[in-house]
Image (tube, rainbow, N blue to C red; front, side, top):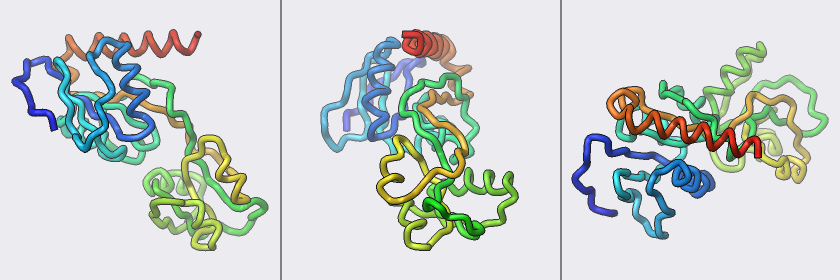
Length: 215
């Protein structure tokens, strides 16, 4: 781990999830003016750049670190943000890492849904309540599709990107709960304390996303 330097009052601490979002997020943030490069492969979890500390976290931990003020700003999928229930400021849809959270069943399944397997119990409960489905929710991790294939659950609620895994396992999307993509999230106190650094960053990211969308 890089030793923490003496920090100026406008120093930013940035929380990014390991995995597929990290590389694309760093490219976008560098285009927005932050002095970031891809960290060399190592087991370090904290990386220091001029004026910025980068924390590599599990996806699910990014909203927690930002909400509790350990990180000033972060990037995380909308699916994780909804499931976290954390009250962070979400100023920019960054439009990458797109996917959707869907209700999935075996093709042709038509029986009552009495049990649902998912990594997203909060989002699943909200959806099932809205649909008037009094199903039991079983929180799972890993290959959620197996719950529907083995009879552990009558349906699953999980992320879908291309649908390739569903087609390979005789599964289909029955309904889409919501579309997801990477979001910039900001600690509300930091937005006031570091306004002169965060507001321009937010505006530059909005402009970059808008330009990329048009292009």
